[in-house]
Length: 164
Image 1 (cartoon, one colour):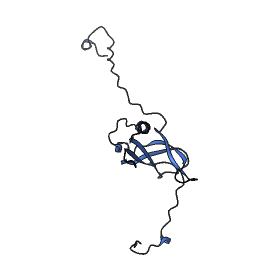
Image 2: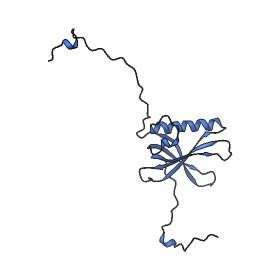
Image 3: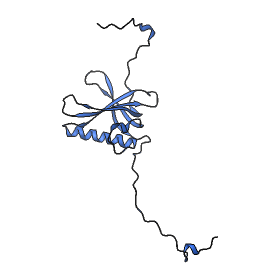
Image 4: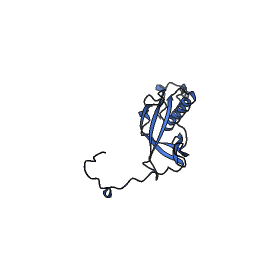
């Protein structure tokens, strides 16, 4: 038994309503927290991402994603790396050393509704992919080295020309 340190009056507090699944679709989101966590088997680790919907009727709702960046299953690692690459391209940060560099940068997440394995008949949300806002991928500007074009010759040196 746990003493509450006083009497709690439930009539004075609005009860939490259970969250319904977020309808499938594209939502503007941003990463609000991230951490590296050990997997259950202790054989690797994953990047845990907490995302928040920032616009529309679902604004404020939280979503989570896990990227198996260190795992004995090579396919799981490849999927995680591709997902991280999609996030990086979506937010315009193409080289990342710390996941915090991806925080609070808006992007679009494709939200899906999937059946829950642990609770038959119930559903949950899953993130099906990431893309930049506006739909076009961020492409780093390529610096091309071009020689400057020579000025058109007027037949005389610039210091000998008359001002017009």
